[in-house]
Length: 160
Ligand code: ZN
Image 1 (cartoon, rainbow, N blue to C red):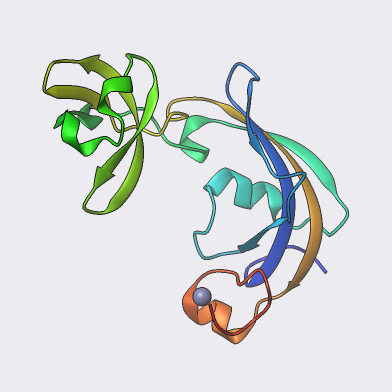
Image 2 (cartoon, rainbow, N blue to C red):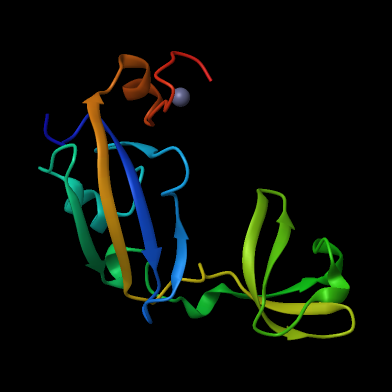
């Protein structure tokens, strides 16, 4: 069965940044389930998966526009220190978790003042060419409930 729109693909993958440094991988965990054709993953990865089959392994290098997007200058913001869980531990260049009304968000610390912190809201990999290694573990048809929700249910169940 080929990977295509409205199939669920299970992958093991590793992700490295532009310099080749490992960022994350799930080879020791359950494979990640992704519903094809519903915007569940970055565009470049989806197109690299399309047409392949279970058991295939491949590597793909993605330009920023096909991965995490360009780095945007309008993503710099000044926020109060109280929005951070550990305001005393903030260091320039570090990534920290900012608590927002929309939930938690990882930001990069640009400048630390006495009450305020300048942060970069860009994804840490924005503007970078990234490298994926992917093993396709399994492919199956999407269930109707997955198509109506627009995402995969990794356990194959109707509810979550
Ligand atoms: Zn769902």
